[in-house]
Image (cartoon, rainbow over all chains, first blue to last red; front, side, top):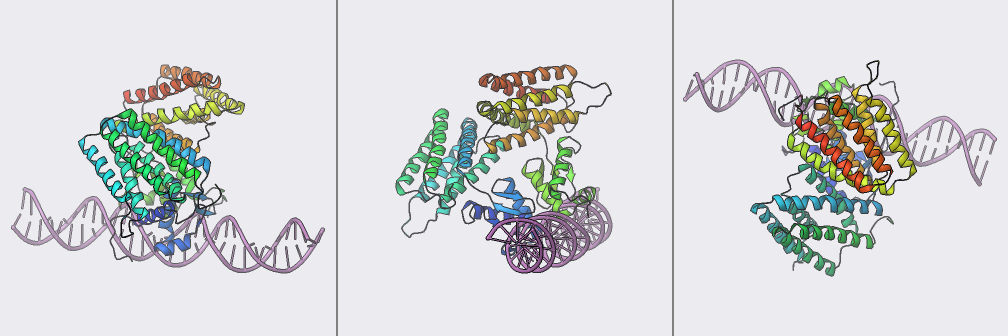
Length: 227
Length: 227
DNA sequence: TGTCAAATGATTTTCGATAATCCTTGAATT
DNA sequence: AATTCAAGGATTATCGAAAATCATTTGACA
């Protein structure tokens, strides 16, 4: 039916699409993910939609209640705190290993990703430069930092947890400019410490970076349920 | 069609069934999980089978190659090592938190689970007492140890990792009686240290317990591909 | 003899419809 | 007025078959 041959499976495409909608906050927590409308919107059958939603549920971005279907995952303060604790532990571990194992190519990836992030952070004159763009660059930078870690399972977990964190970030009010400034210096610090192989300092900086972000989010009034 | 109303969804049932077959080693690593035969075997349509396999893939017990279907996940030395590293970190963290937060009911669960495990370990006269039974009790004991940890995400991850570890255990030759003896004392140590709230000692004991098991498995000739 | 390409068969992927379940509405009864 | 129960509609869960894709084999050609 579709004109495009699509090297990727249909289920994977709709999965990515819905995931983006959830993480970006377009689909609010708790929203029922009704099958018929979603299938129509993405122009797929219920089977492949269901497969996509199943994967989202396994990644904790959706929940499945028997005979009641899927919903966007609920959020809570306690979950964010637990999430943050896991991230500091695991992403910290991954960073340590990444710095230890990383070669020059890894350094280049970090520097490159940071450059892109720094450029995107600067508000452009023409008014464009979406926050989506910043989120993407931000994720890419964090991914680059740990990309030399050889434990693939660890990387898969940290990536998944980052997605969940990103959901909370998107739901919180956008940080003010001063907040952005802090982030800029934090990211630069991370890049410098990592590429100069200062393992302990980089680890501490990353933990504090993650923790601080959560504190800001927790202090912010989320644009959703009371939390 | 099925006579049983089944409070649980069909997909969940077949998921659990196939997972058991994989973890027990009945389905060897790399085995193609062909849809038609599996659907027939479990008396289920392709859609629900696919949903079950999708969940298995998300838990790293199966892999999905586009247009080539699902296979039982491959195993490797490096993966087992990475898996072990993650388990020591995360299960250790979970145990620490569990001991800290656990109440008397938790202690009771630990003691109870250990009692069952100890009894199952003793070979019964009638020759019965399957290793499945021991595996189940073993898993239950480890789960009881960390069951007071309040971080649900952490518990979900450790449970998933334990499943993968169990696959390696099942594929290795069964430990000799002497090995079993060591395990008995290790488990008893774990129970005592945990319930007496000796956090650091319990943590160290758990890490060593997990590490030792992996060393035994790595030393054993697995009954499968070279590894 | 070796290589390439088309055709065939097997398998995955997707679809549209049916069966099963849940939720709401409204009337009847206490 | 409150509660129970049944009927209807809406939604999920499942099915079986069609469409798309991949792997293998066969045959033609260099």
